[in-house]
Image 1 (cartoon, one colour):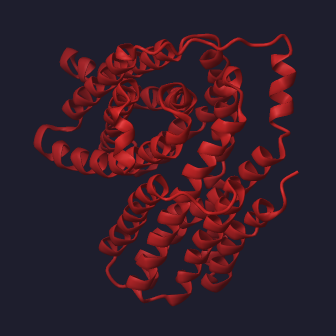
Image 2 (tube, one colour):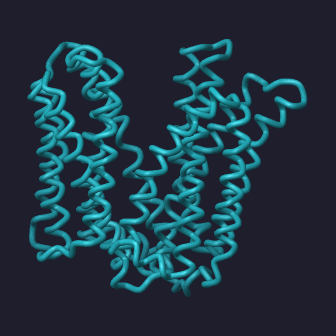
Image 3 (cartoon, one colour):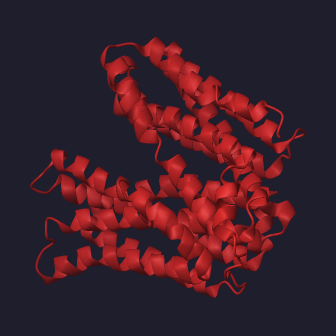
Length: 390
């Protein structure tokens, strides 16, 4: 079973701490959004908050890699958690001292975005040092499950607690969640110090990023994330508002189906070893996920749409887990921090591209072309993964 990898004490500690912190991430997003929404800028200020969350990711993502390869990853992860925890705590602290400045939520969001890639690159860079090689799929499955579950739990908790104790007090709880991750990282006993780096380390990193398997999987995932970004950020809300009965309840159903699919996919990838090469298995899983986008052609049948969202979530997570294990096998230990930060930053930067691409099509009511375009974007690059490796 996937959970058997938790017998590895240090991986268990890191995973639990990371999962608690991810719940805090979800709560922070909702609480800051609620504060801004009820501030003087209203709905218009939410776009600025979103920009503060996303724009700094690229700069931060490219900067954290060298830190992860130069210093003990335990200390980098703990420092990141403490900095973000203190930043979030400034909101309830200023509230107690007299009032939250209008600019503060945006600064907190920007700092969060700047440091977002530290755990996103640091945790996978640490996993190979904490589990046996044959347990990589299970460990990566648990990391994906943590993202899926913590998002659901974090958003739900924030929605409930904001009504009960207010957004400011929710942020105080969020700050404590980051402290939990810092403590968990420091309790890891296995040294996560830098591995010996050869004098040609920089050139080796450039050579590594020209590795065909890494290039193919990265390009395939960037294309898939463009399609998924279009689906989640634009197509899903548009369908729920204008095309399918149910309104907000329909949007909740579709996004819940995506999350349930991610949970199912996480368990499947941790339990099932593909009978073909890892690259071919990733490509086949991506083709299955791409087929889910064609469910949009079944509008207004919302349960067919939900099945498509579920398929995209399940197959998408399966290919993500297998691809992460492949990268861990290919990337030398001394280069993991830089490689994971660069690769994950590239893949995280693509969803807004999809949103921008399909918005004009849907504004013109062209749902068929939108569905076919998303399926093609998600599936065609998978053919690169099915080519003979060489």
